[in-house]
Structures are given as C-alpha cells and as structure tokens.
Amino acid sequence: MKKSLLAILLFMLFFLAACGGNEQENDDNTEESNTEDTSEFSPVTVEGENGEVTISEKPERIIAPYMEDALVALGVKPVAQWFLGGSPQEYLQDELADVDTIEWNMPLEQTLSYEPDLLILSALDNMEGQLSDYENIATTYVFKPEDLADVRKQVTIVGKLLGKEQEAEDRIDQYEEKIASAKEALSDTVGEETVAVLWAIGDQYFMFEQDRHTGEVIYGELGLKPSPLTVELGEAEETWNPISLEKIAELETDHLFLLGEEDAAGIQTLQNSEVYKSLPVVQNEQVYRITDASNWTNRGIVAFEKTVDDILEAFGE
Image (cartoon, rainbow, N blue to C red):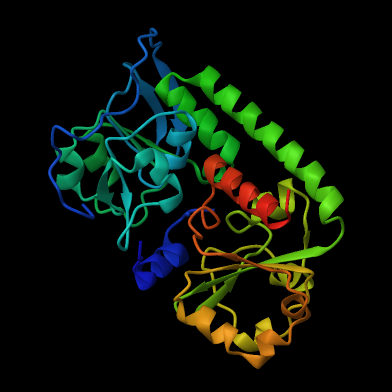
C-alpha cells in the first residue's frame, strides 16, 4: 500500500513518539474492543500525565491512537485505529485489517461518533482537542513520556487500564524469552561485527541512532554493535534530521539494514550512486533490504518482535 511520504515524514519528525482518515461512519460491521471475557473487573486507578485516572467499569470501546501496538499485544481490538498519509500502521494489519480508521489528530466529532468509553493517548501534542474535550467524550488516560518510552511499561499500563494485568505480565515474559533467544543466536552469528540502519523516505535519508525507534532493541536489547557513524550521531533528538549522501559515504559498517519502499527516490539514487556502490558493506553484499519500515519506525513490543524476526531472517537464523 502506497503511503504519502511527505505526511509520514512530517509525523515522524514532529509527533512525540520515542512516536477520520476515511471519515466513514461507524456501522454494524465495526468491531468493538476484543474484551469478550466475562471475568469480573475490579476498579483501578492509574497515574498518567493527566493525573490519576480511575477506570470503574470494564472498557468495551477503546480508541488508542498510535498505541495500538500494546492493545494488539494483549489481544484487544480498538473500535478505530490511528491513520495518517494513506494507511494505518502496516505491521499491525494482520490483526486490525477490519478496524475502522480515525485521523491521527483525533478530530472531536469523529472521535465522538465511535462512542468510546476509554481513550488512551500517547500525548496531547498535535491533537485537535484539549484534554477537557476528550474527557467530556470518555475516560481519558495520557501516557507520561517516560512510560511511553518503555515498551514494557506500555503493556503493563494498558494491562492495568483494561483489567488484563496477568495477560500483560505473561506477554512481557514472552517478549523477554524471545529477546534472550535472539540475542544468543546473534551473538554467535554476528559477534562483534557492526550494524547500521538507514531509512530512505522520499529522496531523504535518516540514520537510526542507538535509541531511535527499534534502535533500542537492535543495539540495547540484542546487543548488536553500532557502526562508528551510528555512535557519532549520539542520542536521538525530538527532531530527526536527515543525513546527506556525502555523509553516507563515510559509513563504515559490516552490516547495513536499508529501509525504504522499492520505488522510493532515495533508494533509486543509492542504487545509481558510485559512492554508495563503493562502500565495503555494499561490495561485500551485506546490505539487507526492508521494504516495509512500519515496525522498524515504531516503539512497541509487537514492533520490536517483528524487527527481531527481520534481523534473524537476514542473518539466516
């Protein structure tokens, strides 16, 4: 599915992450949250960026724009999913393909049309309404930035909000096991060889810092060694600045993950560039193409797991 590259780029640069589209009316075919179990729900109070939020009854109709990763991890479907630039988050569509979309900035009238009983927001920046507007529609929880930045806390908190604390615990244990197994396999396969991640979007290039999106799982949790240029970039800043083709010419790495759609202008430029083709990593055929960057450019347990799978596949594990 084609994306509006400009819209996605603007969102990645300015929307807080660490971070309707189709304006269709909610109809009889719209699935409600997948909260069909009949277990008793105990009221819970959770501290968010907007203070203490109390959930008195089991949420049934949930909207959590750009937080659907945590919902999917717990087997829950929202009544509408985040949407920007032509598509929702691609890597979640096996589970959410039949879920309506809602514009990324949560228009109030559109939000109200889905009659939600719980809104889970990653932040209020760039939303159409104010906190009070959303609270007038439904119980609203806003993530603290430090909790949003931790994929385990994402799942833990959403689990508390939905009365799925044990499921959240189990899901995190499953994630830990996957990371431990992958780390061991890659330690034998890759060892101390260096890894870099480059994303071509439109005609621009963005290099993942060690803590940018899935850089956290690649370098932090899997323990893969960053390239010198990756180290030089330092910590990720809120604004993600592109790097030049001249800077890419300085890239010294044993392995390169190159993200970008097949017809992206930047990919075509690289493939025709003598500078790029002369890089040792290219000449050694250690470049791994990823055409769907959606899970690589997100921060969530499902995104991290799918990225781990991509890496294992690239290295023949």
